Length: 380
Image (tube, rainbow, N blue to C red; front, side, top):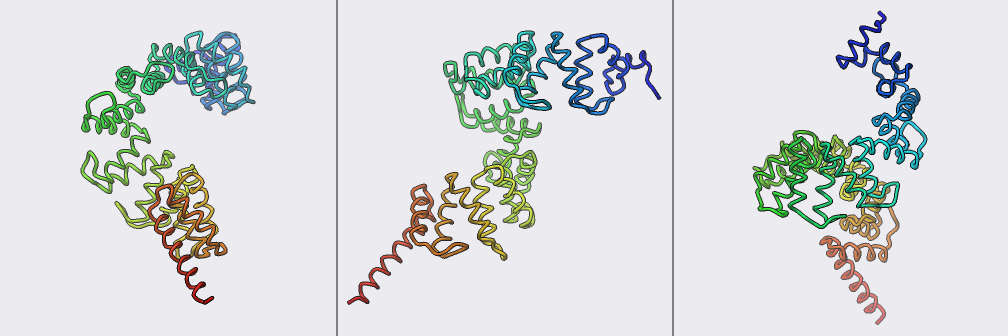
């Protein structure tokens, strides 16, 4: 049944966008900039219409040209990132500037972040701080967090831990989970304030329970090691899994280790392999090494795959992987025996602090000395 204009208007007033199309469409055709923006969001998200990115962009563009700051923010973000539209960083920055100048807090934050990190423009910490301050005054908690980091690390401002704490605390009180996590780190480690392990734990739990993966990861570590809490392997598994499912590579690696060793759950090598692989593919060096060991030590060993992941981990500085590559060359596991190459990798591992690398290096040198003595004895 078709919705009348009047009913659609009532639906719009009741924030029922999915059933507001006749009203929004007519007002947008009349040139209402707010309705052009709303129509863009409807096409972008498939609310009451079939999702259509081109129509969304067209309506955002018309609204932006009429001065709608929200549409300028949307269009600017799309152009800078190349989302739904061909990337045009210069035009995108201009739209974000227009939006920010009109007071759009999200645009001010985005500009601040771009300037802080020098993502698509030369780094400008002064401009970044200016944008963050404007956005923070409007209650944008992400800007509060970025200002906290700036003061905590003395980036663009004089280092001031008390000021950093103030920004993190203000953002956390408004529900920002990243800020809560940072408060936890400050209280646990006594960064600029007196240590308070129990309050730190409360901060971690607040952030973790509200979905912040780094806090979930750290809670998993706490329960796995009995630090700040009573050791609980099942709770460690629970928190690692929540963080891992959000793509946290450290948590993916730790979760895999629990499945591999049957900690907090039954041994499940397929689950272990799955999570090690996800961690490794996300660039986690320890995950790369652990994935290599699974290919290296299974009943159906795949030395080629093991060497691939060991090498990636080794090139990322993982000393245990360097030692494992040396072992493969020494014993011809998937490669030809090459004692010189083994010596090179063992030496690298030992120099990077690997105890097993140091042991392998000493054993290999002892074998070489013995072989040299035996050769000399046979000559005489």
